[in-house]
Length: 222
Image (cartoon, rainbow, N blue to C red; front, side):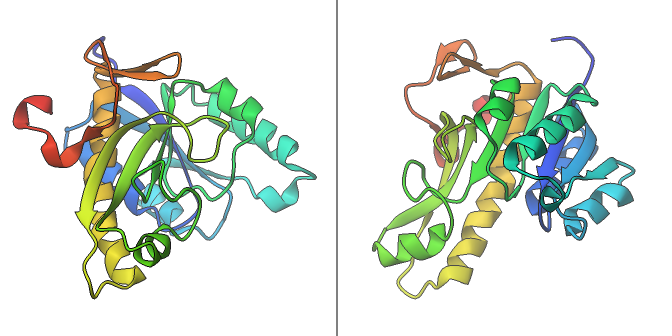
């Protein structure tokens, strides 16, 4: 690894709590990276205010201003490329990315999803977990592919589903773990420990046959 910090572009559509968790870790010196820009498809996204307060460049690309998804994806890809990022981080970005855009950033685009993938892709994951009678739920970080929530998963965190949980309570428990695992994932990538070879995540030079589990990692893993 060179001494140059990893350039990161964050895409978000809402409050940006995972972005803030990553930003806090960067500012504390725990991740050798700099957040070059935050891009949103919503001008009212609270995450943009967080970025501006931190002196980070922001851009808004309203998807409704484009005739179709391909045009939006092309504009979004061009906007990302202007910052020459080593990593693109989806932090609550509520737009499905087309195959051409994903291909443009293959191996250097992350997403976090609030379930233990491959379970419960898409929306309303906490409701689905409760309705399915799951004993465990959690969050997953994965490399993004054209398949929705279907890219290679390399890090997860598990939480219990308790008898009296409702969606909000379970969501808060999962979110606390998201704020742990997403900065860790970015740090591993920034330090050159994590990468993607073909469709297989590689950690410290070893292909991962299954996702790492945050709950089982030791101090030596960080």
